[in-house]
Image (cartoon, rainbow, N blue to C red):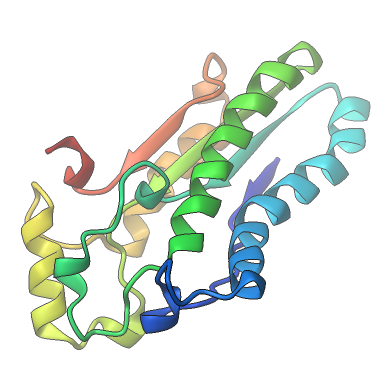
Length: 176
């Protein structure tokens, strides 16, 4: 089993905009998400092939499918940079590609896309948490333990007929 959760954040805040992001930060962000997932998959393949198959669970983000709403971030400093969403969209596509091209080796490849699970640095910002909460159908941000179930499902035999799936865990944000 491989669980791919790596990413490299570069260009947060005002430097994360299309107009201000450097080529170096663009590359670091996209490669930190998609490139790292790609390299981990490539390196685990010989072990999976030798063992008769396996399961890969990649972490993407709801921002791989929808754009961040800049109105909710205000002056929080948590604004999502352009390279983050692009990298996570690439992880979703990488998941689908690998699912289609590795199934003949009994390797399943799926993805989890978390929604608003704010990092501890911004969890004390009541105004920001209120804005996040208003964007979800469940009226609150996610708790870390709420990601465990989907990952366990995809990593276990309970999902033996699932490959190429992207499970979005976002409190209903992207279903609006």
